[in-house]
Amino acid sequence: MGYLFDWKSIGSIYATLMFMRAAFQQLLPPEVYQILRQFFSKFFRFVKQSNTINIQIDELGGGSNNEVYTSVQTYLSSKCFSSSSTNSLKLSRLRNSSKLNYSMVPNQILTDIYEGITFKWSFKVCTTETSYNPEVDRMTKNRYLELSFDIKDKEFVHSDYIPYVLKEAETLEFKSRGKCLYSNREWSAHGGGSPWTQVLYFYHPSTFDSIAIDPVLKEDIICDLKKFVSRKDYYSRVGKSWKRGYLLYGPPGTGKTSLIAAIANFLGFDVYDIELTAVKNNSQLRKLLVATTSRSVIVIEDIDCSLDLSSRTPNKNVSTSVNNANASMDTTKNGSSTVSLSGVINFVDGLWSSCAGERLIIFTTNHKDKLDPALLRPGRMDKHIHLSYCNFNAFKILVKNYLLIEEHEVMKEVEELLGMVKITPADVAELLIGCDEDPGLGLRNVVEELKKRLKFIKTGNIHEEIKKNLKLINVEDYSDEGGTTLRLGLA
Ligand SMILES: Nc1ncnc2c1ncn2[C@@H]1O[C@H](COP(=O)(O)OP(=O)(O)OP(=O)(O)O)[C@@H](O)[C@H]1O
Image (cartoon, rainbow, N blue to C red):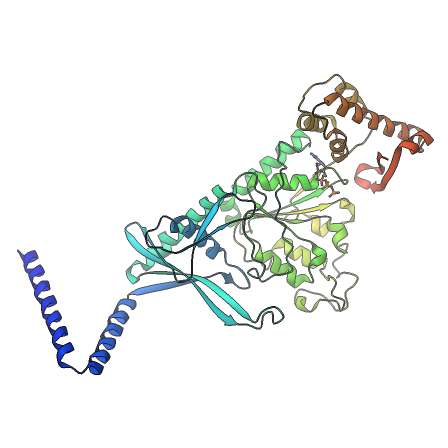
């Protein structure tokens, strides 16, 4: 009965209000009516807004990409096409990806319902003048996402909804990455605030199946990677950032770059390949680390060649003193890099980083002995992986991949020769490539090459006959291999 009464009351109140509105409209002068109307609509909007909370999530935070923004964007992309609340969308496709990506246009509102509660998301862009990079553009576009919800759901948003959105985004990112994608995240050069960043986007087909390294070493690396990615709680319990350092060392052509790609493909991580010589100073190096996203492999190749890292003092070219405090001043007049060993060590330690999420830092070198022990100690370079010349196990993998066979009568001879002569997997790959239709030819090429090298070792000098057919490509001294290695190739 009370229920009926409530409806009747509401009905009569509504009728009275309508009557009054019509009466006011008739009786009051139009100007006064307009003023009253505006006043009441502002009043009702204020009452409504005072019960609403808005959370702003900026694209950039502290000069680097805001990971929450990226995650929420991923989450909303998955919702916006199916949502009935959005009537304008943007469509794009990331490089190297077949996946179409929908996103909101500015000022679009998307309604998301979770656990029966309604949340409103909107995408906004505002343009502000900046002194950040006057040479390029003084106007900067600030993009942000805004979440609106009722004040009574504040606690729920913090403890349930936001974690749910981030978790969903993580799952979506993982699914979209695919096993063989080397990098599929869009990088906005100005967005990261770091135009000097050297980030490579390319597809690399190398996997743990295609890489020819000792099977025991391969298994060891895979176990280490699996353990690392599954130990988030462990790292947070012991109070360490969730990162691991690998040093890959060995002669050129033994698969260091290929292994990095195989690791990235295995983990589904993005790869940031940093050209240290292009980084001006320690300060920029620090910013670079902060700008990297989680689930990434940060690579510095040929660290011994990139910079003078044999001591903690700055690079030889340095004209001003470099230390962490005045890192922004440490640039030479001619603009060359002044990154110091301290800078690199701090980069590895991640002292400045507020980076969440897992990161693998990989250094490669042909000369491990040239590196400062400070850089190599556990905690910085946790795992030292020696990639060496081709042994018979590695050779069998190359034969399987390049010639599509597992056995051949010539294999025995190759096994014996490999016990006496050094050859890199890269050189073997060169000899086998294109011989899949005639595996015997590929194997004979290898035998011939190995015999030439053996003859050279036995005579101790380059024989005239070999001189005719071979070209000395390179002479390198690898202390880890105990002596001088000659790289020979067909002339
Ligand atoms: N272990 C390997 N397994 C399979 N292929 C290999 C291996 N090592 C080298 N290769 C082949 O040789 C090419 C060059 O190898 P890669 O660039 O990985 O060697 P690297 O050790 O990084 O050389 P560098 O020190 O000169 O950079 C690769 O593209 C690949 O085809």
